Length: 506
Image (cartoon, rainbow, N blue to C red; front, side, top):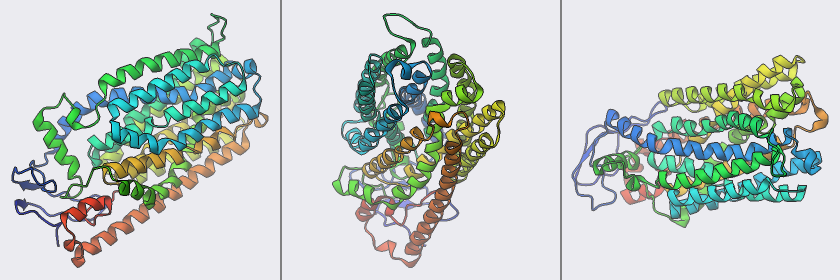
């Protein structure tokens, strides 16, 4: 079988073949002349060494990324806890005004994802991410002082603008420093902070809802205290984050070179062009994988946001708990979900299968919402929340990893991730508007909508897998026919994931 175009100083020990769903990676040895950008790796892959270096990267990167995302999710969903603590009554909010405050967050959140990730590519994660965290922390703190609906809605718009860059930014950063086959468990680890945020938010809201000092009620202190904590975390982020392997001072020069080879030659023996080019940005907008992934993304995220934004309300109305107890009862739901997120991610990386676990998670979520829809028993409905939350949170990282691992070149990948997270984030508008107070305590239409959205996600995931499989067959045909051998190394580098030698994984 023809291999990729070779430089004069390389010796191929094992050819690359596209088969099965996971590529058989080739082992290469090269001379040490690094003058030629497209020459092959100077190191040979060793799984034990790779995992040892990744542990060092994990210890430095995952705790701070998880902490940042915890506060991101905590701050955007704090409004649900504030509502239960009396915010709507204090501000005189109607159901429509509250839904508007929830929904408009996602407009600026969606609009600024791509610009934010391009800024991250330009200035680096170490600088860009702490800046946006600082400003949304200030916005969050100021929200505690609002006096009317207009102030709340305006600040939610600003909060969405600054939070826009965090999730796609961290996802892009991880994809810049973690090889594809090890990516999902890292994405899931920092995403599990979202479930921890639910538990932590419930406990924090429980404590702060009792505060009556400085002339402000408990709901105000939820925003103020969380804002102050977010500002502190932004400062910590500046000292903990790094933008690329070259900035990773905790790695030796040899470790940096070794991991750089694993990343540059991840799936093919010619590195992709990671420079910034407008054509790479446009290629991200034109990539069918991004737009197709949105079916599963929106379908899985809408039920997740229903849990995140309305669980305290569901528990208050369905179980008849007082506001304080409703906050506490959210905690076990999120703890179980966080555990399942990590279990799903571990086996997804181990089996190198994202689609299976995405479908399993959405299936679980649909079953949970179905049980809640069918039952009149409040305790059964509470148990159903465990199933629906665990399924939604555990399945969702797979849809993010699916796109991240199948887009090549840093600029294009940053663009595609931002498009997926930004446009897909509009699912929050659906979640914000399907739980009107007049439909409490059953929320019949909302439960049906969540079941339907999960089924849409499963269908979208399966169709996406079929299209990726078909694309791999077309790539293999180009290799087998000899067409791919006519491509120069520079052409293949610029093709990114469209290279016939880059295998899509699903």
